[in-house]
Image (cartoon, rainbow, N blue to C red; front, side, top):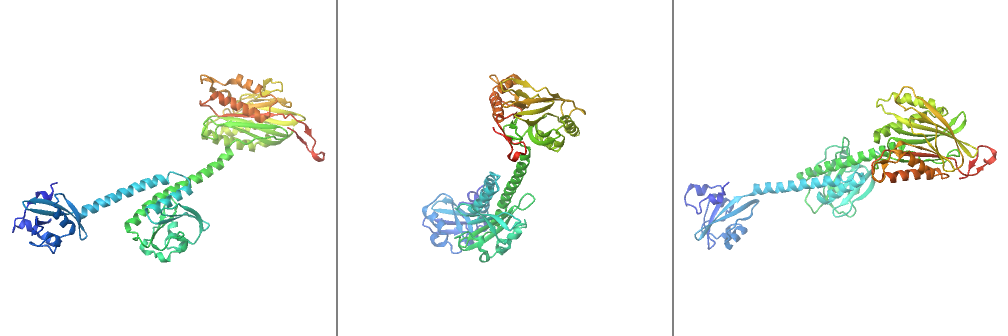
Length: 542
C-alpha cells in the first residue's frame, strides 16, 4: 500500500480543491520556521496555525522541534488525545509535513501486544499451576501469581463444609501464607456466591471501605478496589479468589476483571485436578493396604516370614500373594499359611488376588480340610468371567512340643522345599491341579514334621524362572534354589526369605522378571516355657 505522504503533492497548489479538502492534515513551513500554507484538516488540528505565523507558537511542541532541527525522518507524537506520525516532504526552502492519524493503529497494536502478554502469562500460569498435583502447593502458586500480575494482594479460599476455610494470602513481592479462616464469607459481598460457583459481582459494586478486616493482609493499608471471582472446578466449585488494590492505584477496569476471570478459570481447574488426585491417591492407598502382603511374625510358637517383589519395580502389588491366618480346626489351634500365584501381572492380577484372599479368609472355618477349601475356591473362580487361574500351596502349621507339624497341599504349584537341620533339602510330596480351570480338582496333601531349626520354604515360580546370570538368559532354576536354601539350615525364618530374595535379585541384575514371593515356616530353636498359672500352651524362647 502506497504511503499517502509520498503520493501527495510536494507543495500545495493554492486554491486547488484537492489540497484544501485532503483528509490528511498537511502544512508547509519554510526554513525560517514560518508557516506558508496549511489545509483545512491542519487548521482543525492546530486552530492557532495560519499562513505567516511561526511554527513554534502554533503547532504542537514535538512537531515544532522536528521542523527546527531539520529532521528528514518520520516523527511521532500526540495532539490532544490522538496519535500522529508526521512525514516530512522537503522541497526547495520549505517542508510539507503530512500528519497521518495513527491512533486506531496504535490502539490495535497496543491491544495486540497486551493480548500476547496475557496469553503468555496464562500459558506460563497454567504450566506453573499444573506443575504440582498437591492442593496446598497449587493454592500457593495461584495466590502468588495473582498478587504479582493482577493486583497488590490476593486471598484464595477453598470451599469447606465446616466453616473453617483453607486460605492462602499473598502480597505482591512477598511469599504466600497459608492459614485456616473461621469466617462468614457473606461479610464480603459476592464471596459467598463465588464459593458456590455463581458469576462474579462487578468490582464497581463493592465498597472497599466496607470490606471486613480478615480480607486484608497485615499492614496492607487502605484498599482502593476489590475483585471477587469464583474458581470454577471440574463439576464443583474449586474456591474463590479475592484481588485487592491499594487506594493509590487505578481501580480495576472491565478488561482487567475479565482477565482475572480467565486466570481464575485456570487456577480453579488446577486446584480441582489436585483435589481429585488427592482423593484418588487416598482411595488407592486405602485399597493398596488391603492388597499388600502382610508383615509376618511368630504365631502359635511357629516362625513365619515372607518377602515379595512385584514384576515392575515401580509397582507395589501384582499377581503373587501370601497370607498367614490363625484358624481353629478339629485338630486344635493351627495357623494356615497360603502362597499363591495368579495368572498375569500388574493391577489386573492384583485385583483377582484381592478377591482370592478375601474368599480364602471367608473359608477359614474349613481350613482343616484343604481339599474342600480348594474345591470351594475353584467353584468360586469358575464363575469368574475373565477366565484367570491361580496356583496355590496351603500349609497348616501346629506346634507340637519342640517340633512343628505341617500339612501341605499344592494346587498346580511347585512343591515346598524342606530344609533339615543338617542342610539336607527335600521336596514335600504334594501335588494338585490348577484352581479356576477345571470343574473338579485333584489334590494330594503331605504331612511334614519340622524339628527345631528346620524350615519349610514356599515359593512362586518367579524365583526359579528368574532369568539372569553372566549372559542374562539363564534361569535361576530349582538346583540353585536348593543350594541356596541348604545354606540356610538353622537360620531364622526372616533370614531365610531375605537370603533367597537377595540371591534371586542378584541373579536377575537389571533384567526383567516375574512377580517373586517366598514364605518360610520355621520351627524355632529354643526352650519351652510353661504358661503362667499352669494354663495354656505357654511360649517358646527364640
